[in-house]
Length: 274
Image 1 (tube, rainbow, N blue to C red):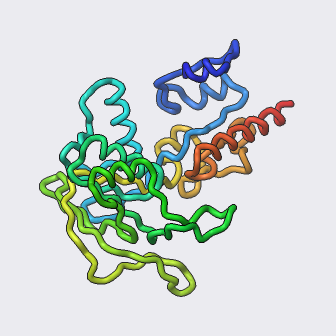
Image 2 (cartoon, rainbow, N blue to C red):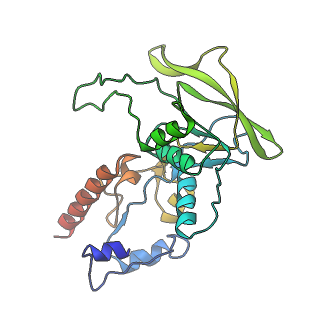
Image 3 (cartoon, helix red, strand yellow):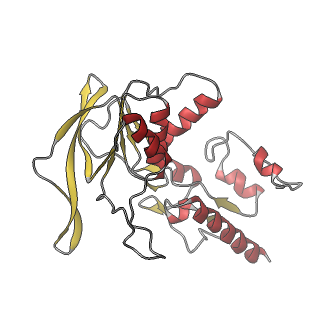
């Protein structure tokens, strides 16, 4: 919040309230009485779950939880809650968040790092012209650091988790399998490739498979209705008093898109009251 103040955000009625959860520490009724308009820009908090046997094993952690806690431990000069040193680490996902996990695992000197991506390996040269999203294999900083530490490309394409193996309550390893997308009856579906099941040792399984929307608990606290964890809106408008913008409105995307959406939402509210 101090950064926002330093950027020139100021108003006699402006208050930054930290460590406060809506619907728990302060009710929606209180907010409704105090403010003319409420904007929810809470992102997508519901991570896509791992659908595999024994996915409740200790040692399975979701990427944002892992990165947030690791950063907090680093800034507070504390021991890492998720200490990856000399551990076998598998990361599921191929996006920016997965890349950050790869870099963190490399800097913590993991024993082994493997990243599983469900999509087909992209070509080295882009095959889709602008403005389409590039269809090109890229190696971002985190994967590059992990590749350097492991002395090989850590990525396995068209691969996913088939089963988690536990020892007591803790993860011991995983069975992985090859998959591919096929057109089945006019619909693209993910199908298994036969005889590709393989066992890998695993001490930490980090899930970075994206987000589905807003958590049920948060929606309940905010008193917002949703369909499949997406808030029901008319453009930015939820009702005359509430607007929603950013990833919470559009689904997971880039931060620049969320920023633009926030600006457009502000314009909508200004026009509404002028």
